[in-house]
Image 1 (tube, rainbow, N blue to C red):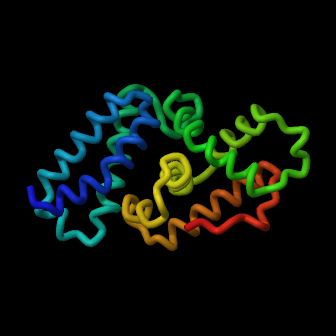
Image 2 (cartoon, rainbow, N blue to C red; image 1 turned 135 degrees about the vertical axis):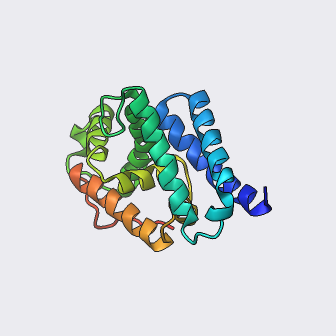
Image 3 (cartoon, one colour; image 1 turned 30 degrees about the horizontal axis):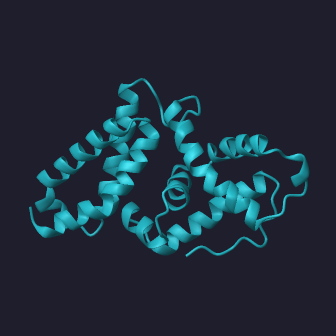
Length: 186
């Protein structure tokens, strides 16, 4: 395989592995899914390497395979009842809750317990668009920069920042936080 394939694989491997791990709930199954996806991408690399949007193609293919694996198991990523989705929500909410506590002032903060706040955030995250949810997971739960998230998803860095800010603002508003002084994200 040419070096540009290995560079591509290195850029996407961690994001794909962590994303599939929190959706599938099984590290070994996630590793097998990621490896088989990269094996397929290696087989079509001569065509893929000339595509300007190969990152978005690879991300869409990968997500399709995660959703297919969930469907094979009789689970759906769109339902909060699945353990995998609950795991993804939990993984994404912990850093967001910390960010909200540090960045916003709730009108009735003294009345909201951590458990109630976490449950509310889970419920509101389930209502986000798929793209908003993915960006929150990649940025806040997995710690990818806006630039790396853009490369992974095959969209512009400005789009990542905009969607990230919109998603966090929607969550803050839904939870009763004041979002007028939401900090900028890189």
